[in-house]
Image 1 (cartoon, rainbow over the protein chains, first blue to last red):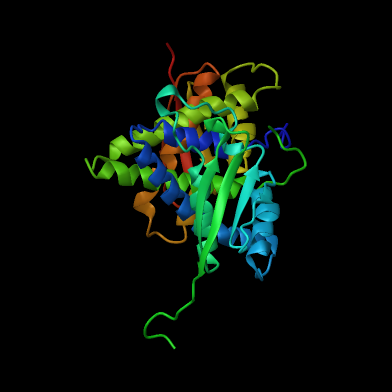
Image 2: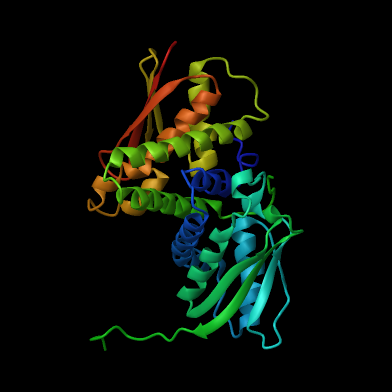
Length: 171
Length: 165
């Protein structure tokens, strides 16, 4: 009696984050940078998986990218669709608002880690993934439900296009 | 919690995160001491905690298990399928508390099994799962020792030895 439907449980949360958090972390900064670096490496790999699964083509502008991130990527991997808002006038910066953050379900920050940026993994993933499609972006968390905000908000800022260059010695 | 009808790609995420956890643990601990055993123990400990948590969710609405074998069957089928999207290929027991779970294509090893190159790293990729099984069993009321062995990637065997009080 194999129950496929009811065992469809988000493995991300139970596996990763609390595991990392309780793996002997004393230094918040340390946690933060590791999360980002770990996230970056995940992002670098996940973009391939994403492109293979979804069939989305090249984006023509940053707005389209924002749409793909929210409607395709977040939907596919975390099962939520964040709202894309707060565009900067220049159109190079926007926010992703998550009403529910799957990574932070059932999570409470312990008293001695109240300032912990728990979901910074996401920043790294986005940065890594976008870098692989020639976009340098800066990602940061501006609101976090775990810090008492009403929602989780990620801010993405477009820095520049990464020009592809041939490795030295190749034609 | 369960997102019925939403097709999620969480398997890929799980694999990537697992890789990162391993790389993090080994990188951060190797600086002060190159004691691999410590890293493995830490991974195993993480797995234990995750296993404990997961088994509670997986068993939420299934009836009580009859005996030890029943528990092991659950681990091989539902538990394995829930995490690795496939069942254990072979379960053997000597009926004296030793069980061998064989997975011919273990998900967490497939990425490193193109050649023999990474054979020596394989144990790193099994520690977490050993803990996972031990944690699951522990929350089902069975104390055990779980070890793993690899002979030919990506197949591997987990040996579960029940500890009777």
